[in-house]
Image (tube, rainbow, N blue to C red):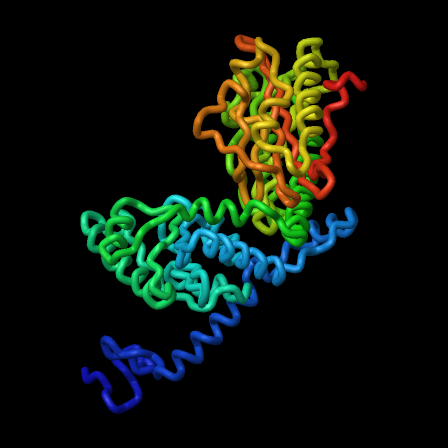
Length: 461
């Protein structure tokens, strides 16, 4: 049987489209460029951040009187802060891998958790000149909606997953690209800040005469002071988190597992456009002492304390880091539960009262209210810490933990600080976790977290 060549039929299937020759393209170069541009424009307009956070979140924010941020102004200001830090340290630029640092400087996302441990995308911010994003394959559209990226190139990832025992060669090829940018944009300055980099990458860049400096410090200092638009984002994120907490508390019943309750926070965050939760810190009953048990399948019993730390990355990528402890069931707390709760609440209130511009971290340490001696062995890791896109600089240690490498600094307006407390006696059955999120203002402080404390545990009911 003949194949029908020249008849318009191709074999017994009578196909009407000539199959491609091996290696042939189904379009001309011009048509390919048109299709690629159309697809990228379509994808950019349908980016999750361009679509927004949905009717539920928007209606709740309107009801709460929380105005929307000016994202264009916020993005511009954040990039300016990064460049100001580069200028202050005389760096030619910063190479950033941490997805939260990329979010800060470029305000876009791509597989945030996966890329936090698999170095597969990165961004170069020069002190002056175009911002270059090295993006994961076929993800070049994910930053277009921001207007912050001047050039997108394919990333060259040399993690072992991709390069195996040929990783040194991958690192050298990657380093040649970065060195080319430094030479092009650095004006002869080869002092490059990098936030996270394996030893192979450091050595490969050094072969090009590039010296490596602390990019984490650059980005933490840039992120330290929040603008009004960033604070609008954070207030909305905190409100969304606290709405999810209300749903958690309303659903809490003896007989549920810890995982059942914790899932409510995840659900409430995601339906309001939030992104993820950093930890699994929810525990009940005897699992609340010592702290830091991760959420489990334990069944919550009537009369149990249920304590949790949100560690939640919400809308706009901003963190809501608050802690609460509730009493499960309809009964009254024991005297021990009330005592622990009151000590934690008093510690939070006193330590929050210390927050104002001009106070040093060492002064906060020296003047803080501390846990009593029988709770001190179980103390939380820090008394205070910064927060923004996640937990951030600075941290304030307990007096007995203040060592030679504990940084001292001065509180400034625009910093956001979390005030921590954990009260659980050494060898005790239960413990109480509380935490508030607080803005440093020009004249003092503003408590950003507003979720009420448990009335029964406070002895008010």
